[in-house]
Length: 196
View 1 (spheres, rainbow, N blue to C red):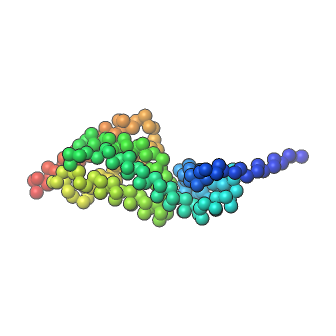
View 2: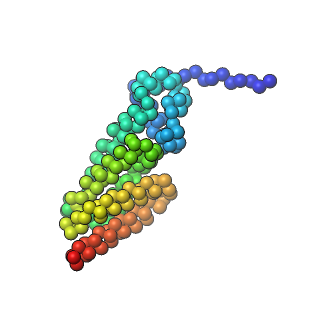
View 3: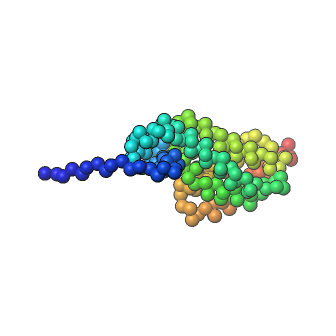
């Protein structure tokens, strides 16, 4: 005869930050399993609490995702702001520093890439647009080509996402390589513009 283990009683989340505890658990599960694979039951189970407790704060996993991005994206931009140069020009070192800063945003980048639905497409598009808008004023005048800006932002974001999924020990070498690559591409576009 097999003994059955009684289910553990639901745990009360600490009153001071239930909202934050739910969001943190949701974020970890979205990153680990992929957004589409996580339901309210999974989050309640992770927190060892009841679904009604979760529903008290959030109506759906989409609601949680929006709250996570609404809280975390503005904070990320504030952390990145000091990296932008004041001279008006980007150099290889600037791209390296920006890339390293993006690597420190590991959890947010992985969260942005944990699903493929409309919310993710919209937020990733907004992320790339914002990154592009930040870079735009600092590029040399002769490289003000929309396709160049788009490629630079895509490259920065893609390289950062791949790096955070990989070995963090290689981050410095990747940062230096990406900075030199982008600076070389900008120099190539500048010389092409001068010849035209």
